[in-house]
Image 1 (tube, helix red, strand yellow):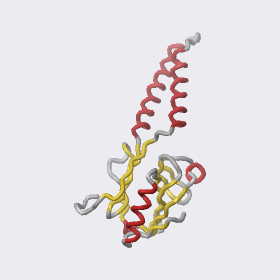
Image 2 (tube, one colour; image 1 turned 120 degrees about the vertical axis):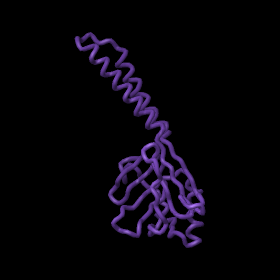
Image 3 (cartoon, one colour; image 1 turned 180 degrees about the horizontal axis):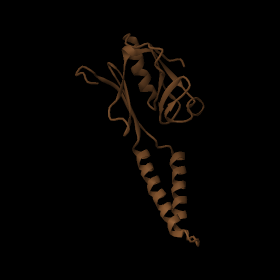
Image 4 (tube, helix red, strand yellow; image 1 turned 90 degrees about the horizontal axis):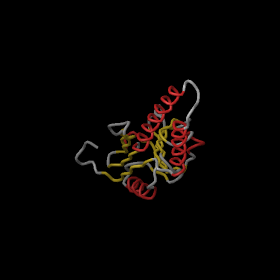
Length: 176
């Protein structure tokens, strides 16, 4: 992405906005607040309340961080770039010259990777936010783990990869 000739062909930003997830997190906050507001008749009442307030503040901080966390994926004329904001300042760059093959993949996030997010699976490292579709990248160097990047813009992603394959820039397959 440093070259002036490097054209962005695909761009996607994914946030954790699943209703079930935020409902569960909201229930946890309500439980914390309830614990903080219910009077306790023990002698350690002040200590317990302070601990609950500290945990509540910590949990809300984590929620804000989680709310802002997002996966950014870009495909340019020179390669595939991705990063987790706010954890990675710079994009991780995968040059097309490093890639052996890219497959469009329907995956099972829980079964194959133990869920969504940044996950290290048996065969690949996954970067997913939601859904079950993405691209599976195999590298020429067999020492490098395969990489899965989830996507919610699957048709646009497929079109870009098909165009790159037609130009013999990347070995891309719809199977997987």
